[in-house]
Length: 223
Image (cartoon, rainbow, N blue to C red):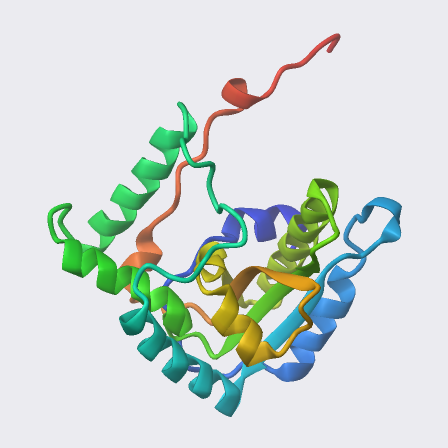
């Protein structure tokens, strides 16, 4: 698979097969992805991969936690700015509506939408989970490095025929995840990721999020 095909075929999969992913493949992907750009070569990413019995324990914990604290825990950062302005507000709204349309969940079906969102915390049935943490002393440029590393991971997974779903929703439960993963206090949770093989029959996987045309976000000066 070339890079273009990997980029074009990557999507947020929200329905996975239970088929296991070779641990050696994941190790190889994570090691290769470390060639991602990193300002000053700080390499600020810290990665935890969870599977097997540990994954089942975490899913059981999260089933209880989502019921006990449906609004989450005190957040350590805002996934989105508090007041999104146009065109970002409309883009976020539209992708949500498109997803629920694929699932046949009506706008007024609040319970159905909450139940679908809760599936995030079961990794949509994926056999593997990845969590990325970062030293609290790092700033926005290093958070950019995290994104480049994680994008490289997702593209290498596609090369191997594996899909993923990046999940910043885990930022709602930083205390639970810190306790489970036992990472040090000086690090904070950035994101999670579900990893596995796509269930092509899952309705949610019909979603292909729209992208703005090139003319909307790019300017060319002198060329």
